[in-house]
Amino acid sequence: MKKYFLAAFLLLLVFQANAQSRGIKIGYIDMEYILQNVPDYTEAKSQLEQKAQKWKQDIEAKKIEIAKLKDALKTEKALLTRELIEEREEEIKFQETELLDFQQKKFGPNGDLITQKAVLVKPIQDQVFTAVQDIAELKKYDYVFDKSSDLTMLFTAKRHDISDQVIRTITRAEKRQEMTKKQLKAQEAKEYKEDVEDENPALAERRKALEDKKALRDKQLEDKKLAAEARKKEQDDKRKAAAEARENKKTGTVSANDTKEGEVDETEKAVDGTATETNKEDKAATKAKIQEDRKKALDEKKKKIIADREAAKKAREDKKAQPKEEPKKEE
Image 1: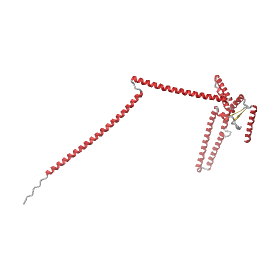
Image 2: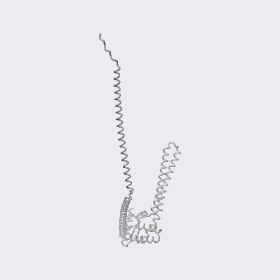
Image 3: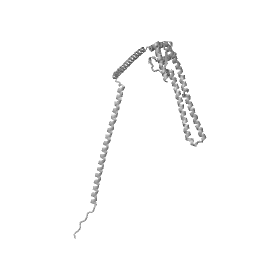
Image 4: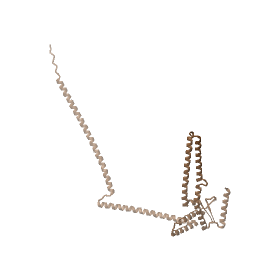
């Protein structure tokens, strides 16, 4: 490992020395970054991941099935003959072997996942290699390395990274197939501007600053426009409300709000009137009860007086009815 590291280091030193002496131009790409930003690859990769997930689910289902067979054999082993036990053990072993074969077939070193990934990456890699050759020929690069390869790169200056240029070249080719002549002409002008900016980072930064400034100005104008529209709407609503009020005053009609308020007042009055009537009824009932109790007390008192009179009268009559004692004669 140390030998490879040292060789790579010496190779970079040689390239640097040659670049300084003969003006050699060196660039690099990041294949992983490019693949992540190519729409065709990301879509196909998502489909492959869905397949891999389905394979994992099949494996888990097979494991559960084997575990159930083992549990059943453990539970029923005491009731089975030796031949049946051996038969079930062979069945479990066969299922386990089949599961291992399936795992190797799908996820092994030469499995479907690896081979399909290679098939998936191959067309994108071909496009990348073609784009790198075009860029290298156009911009006079002598060497272009892949940062994500086995080659160890101790330091890489961002200005030598042409990954974004490669992505633009690939996407440009896809877009051009669906463009008209007029659109192609506009696209070529845009691509030329982008290429110039790639060669001159300061120009790109200045363009980005101008775009940010323009975006800020557009946002401020839009905010002012929205605020003006809101103020205009508020004034229109006020004028409309004032005109309706004047019209209602002339015709003697009542607006919906006034009608609603009147209905609320009538409801409140009705509630108050009901409460008053209830209080009057309660007072009348109380008064009637007091009068009834008073009348009942007077009747009882009257009955008692009459009873006392009758008793006194009877006592007098009984006294009169008793015979008088004759006086004794003297001898």
